[in-house]
Length: 230
Figure 1: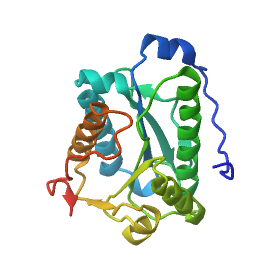
Figure 2: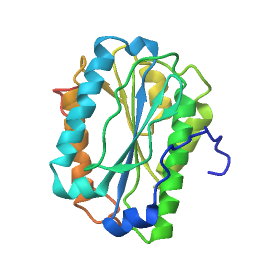
Figure 3: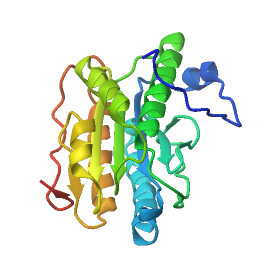
């Protein structure tokens, strides 16, 4: 993915990867949450999303194995911001999200791909095995930037089994464009049921963490019609 356009990210606290992996040599399952913080998410949507993230942290942290194996990073877009380095679920602290500007979804996806590639290099350098990385996108709008190149990179990554990509549209989302970005059929969230969505995500990542990193396929819990329009 050498043709990716890099989005600057300055981590104020550089991490000691050697010590990190020495303290916890468990295989890792990295998951990037790509979260829409554009102006249209203001009010109830961003409030419910923040509550959902807190619930997600609590659920993952209550699974002793997932807490050590699942790593979470958050990228928000509107503008694109990387909210810190990957953290295992037992150390993950969700940022308090606020709404800002537009919906640069394409740039956010490219940044997520960069973040994953950098993390994989850290795993490889430290001899730590890892599961196929996840990118989990939540949006209530349509991209305001050029998303086509990002979509090509996503499809290439999924086809080569380098990553898994999921997209969820909140009310108002451009589902047709999401379907052109995501090889997996996007799901539409019912109302603002972020808690139920993050329950499913936690259960799914927990299932991954209990499998073998070299397992080719894994049956994930099916999305529930309690939170998704199937």
